[in-house]
Length: 253
Image 1 (spheres, rainbow, N blue to C red):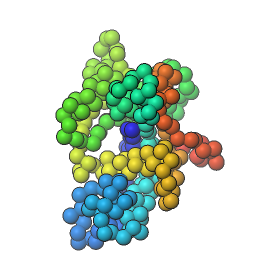
Image 2: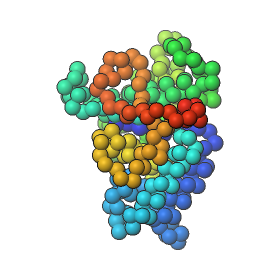
Image 3: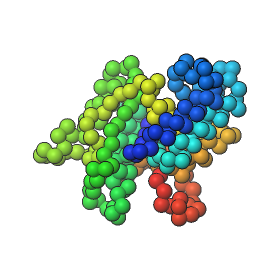
Image 4: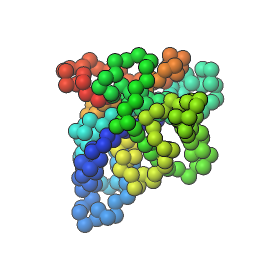
């Protein structure tokens, strides 16, 4: 599974403020400098650096982080492979992680296109330079894995997109893809929490706190074409609940 959280211009400051508020739920002010990062599973389960911290405090921190997603209307876009169907399908023992990454990248591109006020659907590509984005991934020590991610990205996003033959599908992506240490990137920490909760929801795992519902209206399953028509059956998607109001129907994600 791969998930992306889109931070529109002007939204980051208030999210950072709420991130600091979440830290205060699990650490006293005089120990905030000792904080390293939120890992979703550890925070939820009370393991690792959060072992021994009261559940109520940990869950309040989760609520604060998700409030940042909810209040700022941050779009969350994901692609989740059904491993069993993938293995039994045309790709056999291929790499489901890279397929999810491929779909997620294009899902963000589709969101950027559909986000334009004058977009009415169809295949005609629209560009709006205000919606260009930079892709930042969680860093890892596996060099081969990182090289494969770069290869996938560069297959979809031409280095010189406006030079013939214009083989480009990530028109709203600018520059190369970058890796960042999650300790220094609160956006990665928050999307990790979203990923954890969406994965549990897709797997049907009980989650008594209903944290997923806090941002469910902003969740989008990446369905780029022609990939989705050809291979959509190999991916999992959440059930879309009926829209309750005009405000919801016009909201992002």
